[in-house]
Amino acid sequence: MEGLPKKETSSGKDLDSGWREAVRQSLASLRREGFSVPDLVRGLRARGARRDGVLLAARGPHIVRVIVLLDRDVDSGATRARVRAAYRRGETRVFVPWVLRWRMLSNVERWGLRGVSVSTW
Image 1 (tube, rainbow, N blue to C red):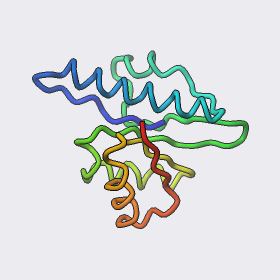
Image 2 (cartoon, rainbow, N blue to C red):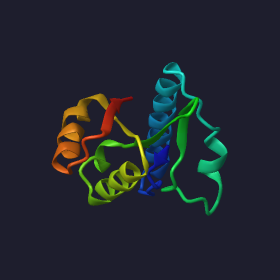
Image 3 (cartoon, helix red, strand yellow):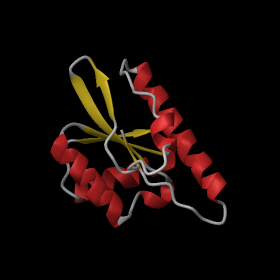
Image 4 (cartoon, rainbow, N blue to C red):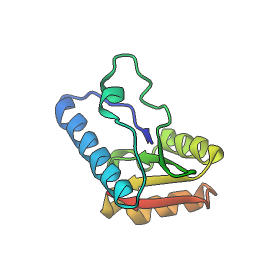
C-alpha cells in the first residue's frame, strides 16, 4: 500500500487522524477480500520512514499496490505521479472517500491508466 505523506497543518492532529482512519478502513476492505496486509502502524510512525514508499497487500501470489487518498489529494499532480509510478509496477488500487469516487475514476481515465481500480473507504 502506498500512503500519502503526512502533511502538518494548524490542525495536524486531525489531518493525521483522518488519514489513519482512511488507511484503517481501506485495510479492512482488503482483508474482507482475503488480502493479507502487513502491520503498518510501526512503519507509518517510524521516524525517517519513507511515507511515499510502496506497501503491498497480497492474496497468495496476487499482489496489489494500494494508494489511500484524502479529498484534498484527489486532483493533485503529486497524486498523478504516485498513481502512475504504482501502475507501472503492477496492479494498483486507489481508495478514496465515497463522494470522490467518480472524480477519481475521471482522473484515472484522463491520465490513461486503464488498469487502476478505484475503491471507496
